[in-house]
Length: 97
Image 1: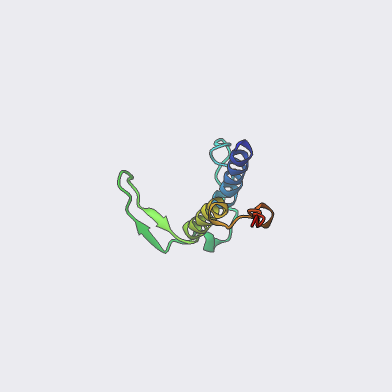
Image 2 (image 1 turned 90 degrees about the horizontal axis):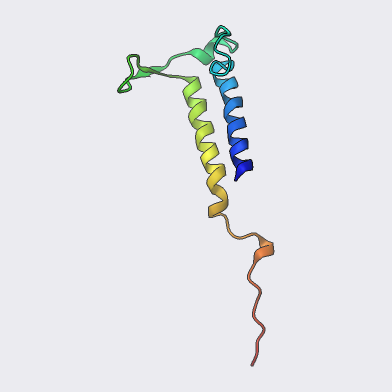
């Protein structure tokens, strides 16, 4: 369980590096820079979010974020729905007739 939490935290940090172009919440004193091509920052639509003054931008970033989120959920839950491993099959009972 602890290993899983560590991997999750590390992957979250790495995804933040990819998606935000840096670690703005770990190093807030560093100015935010744009390290990705212009198309990464494109806005396809804006969704109003209750409680926020500005609407949320929909674009490549959100698409990749949603894909990776669902991939992570699938990887987490896949073992629960997978058939038992071949080595753990139930042993057949001998015929005692």
